[in-house]
Length: 115
Image (tube, rainbow, N blue to C red; front, side, top):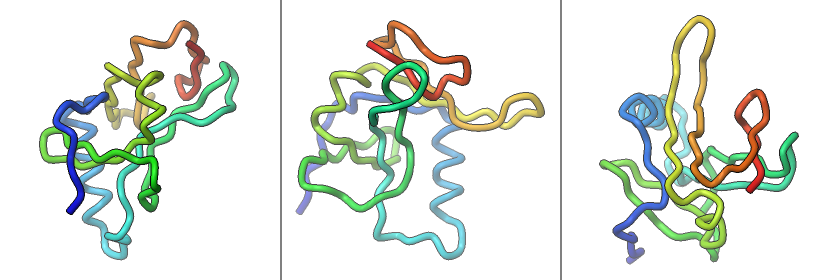
């Protein structure tokens, strides 16, 4: 049995939760994959956000936010603690956005940051 930690380091807006659940309910979605939130090196500002579906790794921790389960590498909490993920579906802006209180600098598109 996998333990789920009670205090998730990131949160999701209702729009983000609805879009992620919609994606996971699509025909052909691989239900063996987990929603991953994280960071990786690269991007204009030094670190880029990761939001996707991947296999669980040894260093991942399980979280749940309002019925949405996700995984995150233990070490990424330092960069992402307190972050909110939103989904916009407008004519001028479509996609996930990240509001990160730990970011000291972000790029113009909002997909990378530095601390």
